[in-house]
Length: 352
Image (tube, rainbow, N blue to C red; front, side, top):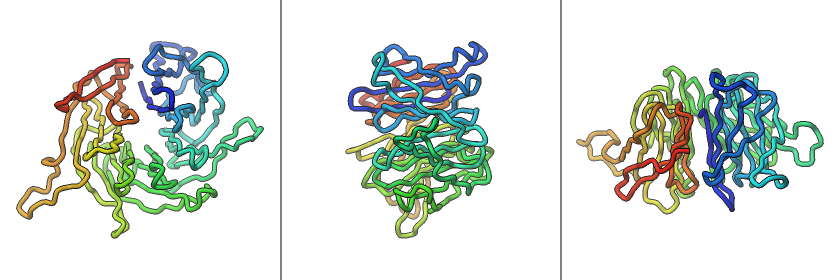
């Protein structure tokens, strides 16, 4: 499994997994798979333009009723949960060429800001897309802005949580994280670069993944993973007007994915990181304890690290809406569901 995503709606919890295995099956057999409450999988229509291309990412909308995917053939496709036909049916409503190279990531904005998608790719850009309601054209999705500050491929893009406004962060192969913000949510053509910081400069592939903290009463924070294996939490200081390292969570092999768990009402934060053959869950307090002058500067004494016993390399992971269950996927072609017991030990409770 190359990618998957959780999506939440008022009636059910969705998970989707996307796989392409050309060595084992012909391109015509390539499908998307949607699992509703872990029932029998439902095949989704595969984009006609990408029958032999790898799907790199997928993302659910806020309602869980729309799904966007991106692939190596430079395209983005959008699927809608069908109101007619069989229950749980999906239909492809749009597909278009979005970049001049492979598209690595795609993400939805909160519906408060409209039907907006962001994407990034191998052409060193991040793109802003908006759906034009009522349009009669073949593709209702219009490019509103192209962010071209990077000089190397943009590996990751993520929109900030709703309370931070319409802003996004990108992570590039140059090791730099860039934060953009829409000056006017009614004018999506203007996305000035508001901040940037060196997160994984000098490593082979730079920043590989990033994830926002969703806590409303915390300062804007990002967890960033890089090809050097470093996973760090960066927090924006309003007084200094810059991003600083708040937590150095640890280091492993090349970090492939990071996700920040939702934690409403908790006294701690939780972050999961995939390093290929290893998956670690980091738990750390909302506020760091002050160090004495003679104490070690390391954060290890305040960060609890749990390593999951995974089978094979894990490439992608994600949390459910409440941050209590972790899903992992990788080379074994299955999605593992993990929960912690009362002692904080993580156990696999389901293999889908």
